Image (cartoon, rainbow, N blue to C red; front, side, top):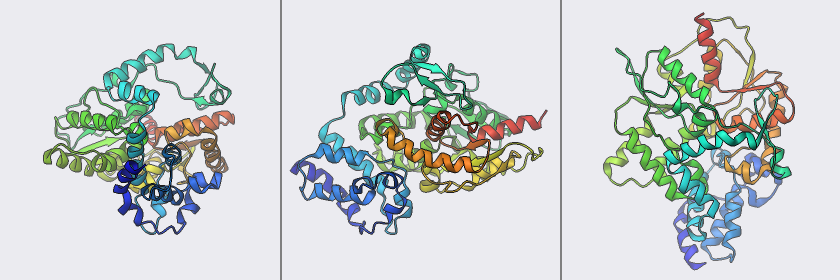
Length: 430
């Protein structure tokens, strides 16, 4: 315990910033459901402080509590003392994982599969071929499937299955060298838009081509690393960041664009702050990459100045859910909405549009009951708008909302803003 206390002590200066005011209680989506002090930021920071002071004898229990967090950033966004809670919790998870070791099943997932892009791609292709043995197709608006087998808890889920053809296997995953192109962008689809929602990655490429943008898509891209990092596996995270840096440093480009809110936050915020560069050159590249990485809606609205594409405003009404990584960490709010409006759709704001949907990546897997309770509050606000479409810029949020809406037999479709814009763009050309 003294050894662990010494490791956690490196967080002491960060912990001292918290004045224990309790503001985080009012905004924490998990605390709103459980009313448990251990589930809110103040309680977790107190536990870490207790570790430094050697007050606890069960580090595994502390690790369990620290990991029961959505990492949504609601507390940090509202903190009057500007405590960087997400950074603290991620660093704490790394320390606690180094102390208690990564569980075997996580080692297999992160270090054998995800940290090796070729092996990960092959594994997902094989899994797609046999997923019909596990998942049963459901007739629903959200195009989800249910489990044929496994425990009652898992059977209750509605899953977005692996796509038959991942984005990186399509004709669109190639470089586009266009003459007289004003900008050159690098494209980072992210794992979910490569393997589960490849159509959205394709839509992104079609739009960029339509506007004459030169596109650079490195082959064999790896995961951004956030699943491993959120589990405290810095080794896998470091390997993935290093792999991606090597790919993207080969060619110069004006911007890196991605349709994934989580990947963007990881690249802009966590790659420079958590990954330890090998030298000055690598550090400069990371900082430069962070500064020119944009959400696709930011690139279209702020850089290309895309506006109304000139179709009738009689399309479906759309409401927008702000992903936590966009609104609370990167302050991205207006651009996705402008993109929806530019498509000719009517945008209807829901109540608490920036409240967390409860997904939180692996939080949903390990704490499904709490995750769904949080998500149901979001879905109620969606349904009150009477919109036929809910849009969001995060694949994890899309999966969560699809799960809940499908179980409620709702007719509300879940889409990405880029999907809506692309459909309108090409309909307007007919």
